[in-house]
Image (cartoon, rainbow, N blue to C red; front, side, top):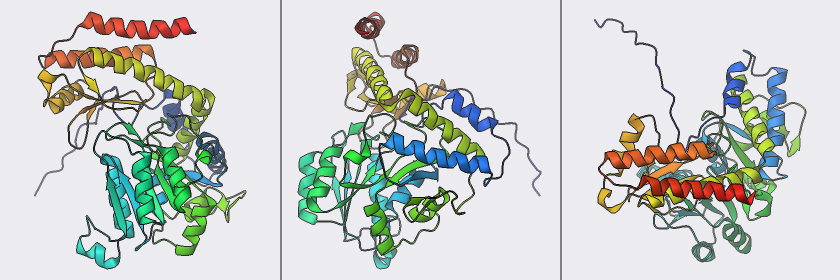
Amino acid sequence: MHSEQIFPKLEIPATIAAGPGPGNTDARVLAAFSGAGIADHMHGDVLRGMIECKHMLRQIWGTDNTYTFGVAGTGWSGLDVMFSAVMPGDKVVMFVNGTFSGIDGLTVRMKAATAEELAANSLDPQPASVTIVNVPHGESVSREVIDAALAEHKPKWAAMAHWETGSGRINDIQAFSDSCEKHGVMGLVDAVSSLGVEDFRIDDYPGVAGWASCPQKGICCLPLTYAPVSLTDRYIDALKASGTRSFVHHPMMEARHWGIIDGQDVEKGTYHRTHSAYAVAAFHEALRITLQQTVAQRAKDYAHHEAALRKAVTAMGCEVTSNMTSLVVLNLPGDLAGREMELVQNCRARNFGIWPTLSEPVQVRIGILNLLTEAAVTDIVTRFGEAIEELGGSIDRAAVEEVLDTHYRAALAAE
């Protein structure tokens, strides 16, 4: 008979979340989360907060889509809601250029597979109706690739990541929307990494019928709060016509809980799931912060600080291959090639949370989500330089400091 074991209290130290995400949650958001009263999830203030979140999300997304709301969970929950409209046998083209668009591709294959196709390989189905267009790691999905695939296959749906965090590449969302319109395709976009970081309005991309993001990157909320989604009337009409076999992640049932019924905002929604007063309070404050800062200003701040980080790691002898503004993906100096995982683990052991890429070739990813100050970027650069030196690499610290100083002094002078 085993004796009972009571483990000591879990103490998780403060870390610098300098990876692709989750990002660093704002102190105001944490205070809102912990400060919420123990309220019934149908309490009037909780419901009012949800209604206000819905309206703030429309401003942040830049849309008039009524079906704009938050899905309880992480970004994968929001994506699953968006992909719920894909039914067995649906013809889909999926563009893949990294780890996360690859998982989106698997989601699409699972949803589009017939019962027989799913049974043949339930964890990795290969439905005849789905075309996966693979773009090499480190490259963006281009207009030419998109248009050629949609012209050839004429699918019902096409899907793509806006920003592919696996390799740090931005894909051509304008080309994607244009091509979807041209070929009569309904576009679906994974905006997990771009919402709240890049300045864009989704209503400017009429070829895209569905959008899904996450709470913990550009919105800078807790990982387990609400994943923003926005769905056009065209998407909802297609969903009504086909239905979906999801209950929990049924887009229209989720929307009803947020006071969206039959395409209209209503005073009170209908019960679909148990929401958390704590999560609603945190999400509400995160959206308020985003609107107070403005998406346009945040986009400028990300570009400014990413440029500083890029220049600094380049001065250390690293090669940057990404073009996102919240994340730098790099190859280590030649004499340290192949030791990326070792360097990342050393950094994590010191509460400096950077990441490797999750697919080949292995690279290092350093993020600046909600770390938009000169002091924060300087700290990241200093820690990363120390990690390189610990592995036996050599850097010119004075040159790196000069690069940072020049970048930030030039910005001050421009003001």
